[in-house]
Amino acid sequence: MLATPIYIICSPCPQVGKTLIARLVCEFLLLKNGTAASFDVSLKEPSLLDYLPHITETADVIDTYGKMQLMDPLIFHDRVAKVIDLGFHAFDEFFKMCEEIGFMKETVRRYVTPIILFVAGSDRSSWRSYEMLQRQIPPGALVIIHNEFALRGGLPEAMVGEHVIRIPALPAFLKFYVDRLSFSFTGYLRDEKDWSTELHQWIRRNYTMIRDLELRVMGRQSYKPTAPCGRPRWHER
Image (cartoon, rainbow, N blue to C red):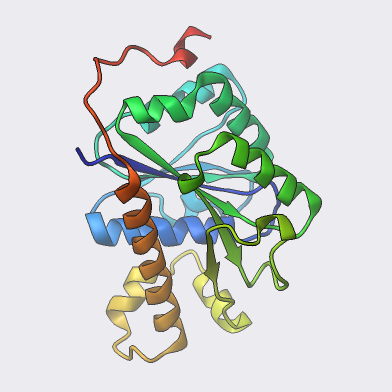
């Protein structure tokens, strides 16, 4: 049985390019599958909702109702890939909730595969949060994103040697271009006939990395039929 992937793009640090990564993942999924669903848990403007309003819903983890509204569609195996743009303000509460409700075990039972894309920062909170995720997330599902535009130096020592996806830094004028609310990565690939442009190559390279990541993570999963699932534990809280 093919599982439903959930991409959780997260970081405890602001200004690391998290929403940029979420946009790339969403547009890749739309191009590959024709459909996707995304959830914007962010306080910053502009956010994923501004870029992809036709597939994005706002969400929060402030109270039990908000958590249920976010988690219920995530745990539903409908083969529509999900993307969460998790704001840094909600990082701790989200993963605390995941641990409390046994989210990772629940996903296995329900044929759902989380893929955690941890966007690295340069401060202490970044590697401390990464160490926390290492204890909570299966190794194959936890991936470091090194956005070279936001993190100019090397990765923190604690992250060296782990599975890393590097997003090359664009020149400032191209970064300004892709940050426009009207810009579409897939639209650019379709409209720009010159494949040799720097931006064309950058988008294709990143799409290829996302494709290879999905094949690697999803290929590791082995699903067996289970008994019918009851209501998840967060409904009992």
